[in-house]
Amino acid sequence: MHFFVVTYEFIFCPFSGNGILARSLVNSLVGLGHFVSVWCTKPASSSSTSSSSSFGGDDEDEVMMTIFPHHNGRLQIFTTTVEESKWRCLDENSAWETFVYSKSDEATQTGLRSLFEEHSQHNKMTTDSSPIIPVVIDWHGAHAYQSLPFPPHWKVIYMNFRVYAAGIQDETRHAWLNQMEQRALQTADQVVVLSQHDKELLENLLLEGSGKELQVFYPPLRKDIQELGTLSSSSSTPPLPLLPTSLPVGKRFVTCVVRLSPEKETLRFIPFLNSIRDLMESKGWIPMLVGSPSDKPYAQMVRDQLFHDFPQAMDLVDTFLSPHELCAIFQATAINFHPCSYDAYGMTIVEAAAMGVPSVIADNGQVGASHLIGKDAFVPMDMVVVATIALGGGEEENRDDINSHKSLQHLRTILQDDANLRDIGQRARERALAWNEEAYGSRLVALVSSDA
Image (tube, rainbow, N blue to C red; front, side, top):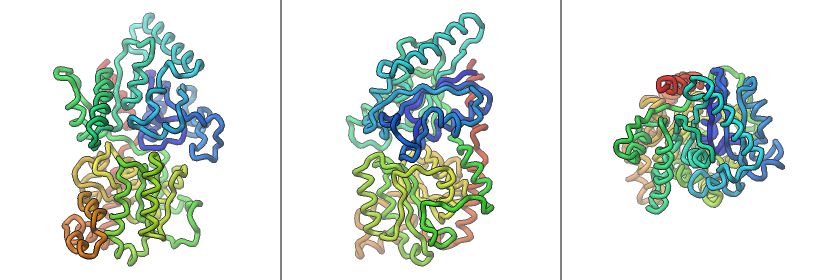
C-alpha cells in the first residue's frame, strides 16, 4: 500500500504530542513495508537553522537518516514553509491558511502533482481500487488536503488527534473550531480518534445519516522510548547531561511534562505542588517543568509563579530533548503530574509509564491515556480541587478545608507509600510497553483492508 499522510507537524522538532504521534504513525507503516508520502509544514527560519537550535535541526535529510534510518526508499517528504510566529500553534492562531497547495513552493507543488498523476495513471491501468490511501491528520491536514486542485476520488482516512473546541469557553472560537472539524469529517470516509470521549464529541458534529462509524485507536509508544523503557531496569540509560551532576541519585523529581499553553492548564502544576509541599520537603523531591512554550506570555507566567513558590525548582522549557534525555528525566522522577482536565490522549503519561513512573491524572475519564493505562495504574485527582487551591488554597484559613478533600487525601496516602507507588508504576509500565508502533500500524492497515 501507499499512504499519503497530511500533517501540520512532522519534519522539524515536534512541539506537541501530535508531531510525535505523526512520526510514530509513519514509522509504523514504513516498518511494515508500506510506502509513505508525507506533506507537512516547516517554519520559515528552518533553512538557516542549525542542528543545535530549538528546532532540533530535523530537516528532510536528517529525518530520513536519524528518525527513519530503515526507510529503504519507502518514505518521501513534501514541505510547505509557514510563518515561524504561527508555527508552534495548533488552534485558529496556527499557520493553517498558509498550509495549502497554492502557497507551497514550486518544488512541493510539482512533487505533489507528479505523485497524484503517477498514481492516477496507475489506477487506470490496474484493478487496484486505491493505489494511494490519504490519511489526513486534524482539521489543518484536512484543510490542506481539500486545497489540492486535483482532488482524487480516493477514500480518505481522517485521524483526529485532538478535538480543538473541547474546553473552549469563548462561543465564537468554539463555533469556528467546530466548523473546521465538521469540514474535516465531511472529507472523510473513515474516522479514527484517540479516545472514547473524543469519539462522543465528534459524533455530535456528524451530520445525521452520515453512516460514518468512528474508530478508537490508542496512540502507540514510540519505538525509541519503548526500547529505552525496556532497558530502564538496568543502568544503561545515561545520566541527563543538562542537569547538575551534584544532585542526589534516585527518584528526586516531581515532573510536569506538557506544552506550556492554556489548553494544557500547565499553571495547575504550582497549586498541585503547594498541596504536597510538606511531602516534597520530607522526601527531598524537586519540581521539574518540561515543555514547549507555544504561548510565550502564558509560559512566562507559569515559570514566574513556579520559581516564586519553589526557588529550588528546575525547568527545561524551549529545549529540545532527545529520547535519551526525556527518559533520563523520567528515570529520576517519583511522580508525574498531568494538569489538564481534558486531553485527547496525553502521550507523556505513557512515556513516563514506560519508565515505571505513575502519573497524577484527572479523574473525569477525559484524558485518553488513562484508558490505556487503566484505573489501577495511575493516581486519580479531582482537578477542581487543584483549581480551588490556586484560587485560595495558599491562604492559611482555607488550607484545612482543601486538605480534607478525599481526592487530595487519597493522593497523599499513595505518595507516602513508596511500595504502593512502585506497584502502580510497574502496572503502568507493563501496559505502556505492550502497545507499540507495529501493533498500531497493523491495526490501521487492517482498517483499510476491511474497507477495500
